[in-house]
Image (cartoon, rainbow, N blue to C red):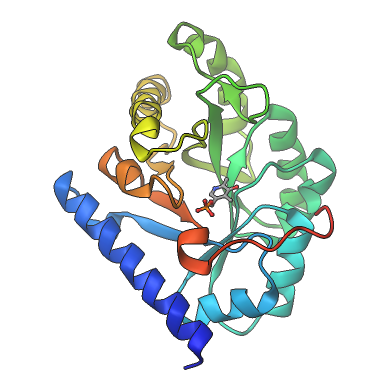
Length: 246
Ligand SMILES: *Cc1c(COP(=O)(O)O)cnc(C)c1O
């Protein structure tokens, strides 16, 4: 095992340990939480090392960068490739044809395009509905910061849930950036409440997954019900600067 793989493996296992401890605090099964290792803006050698270190779900933010990586590593290992960043409409085809899972479905328009491309490629794509709970203009997702407005989301979400080639599986959030993990807790709690609300409105839709928590706050996210955490820098180190737009 190379030094790089060893060092990533150590941090990967450490993260799994912390996830398990946070799960126990919340009386949850550690196995119910899946760790997405975020390799966006990391070179292919780091991605490969993360796979060798044991990562089985990789998260990428830019469709073309992610597609290039997964195509060059195809056959290396049976890892899952998850798209976790905002997908522009014109990149829908790349996502539909390459990725195993989309965490960041943030509009009806994108959903309809993905559904069309998935149909053409004879694929079915599991997706999470992304919500903007902080109300920041810079964030993607259905605006859900004010609970009063939740009912107004239902018509559009019903259309998304009925698309034949997308499988809705749950919710995703990216809280406003705070310096302390505790800053995220109320957003995670609100996501859980939104999940409960949506389950009550759509009893036949699978909304069981909650994708929330990054390097700084994943333990809090697990305590509050995350089933996917998305951890990058704490496992694979600081990102390289992006040299191109995906
Ligand atoms: C970059 C990113 C992450 C990982 O962030 P880290 O701070 O590196 O753990 C998780 N989720 C999304 C949506 C991201 O863009």
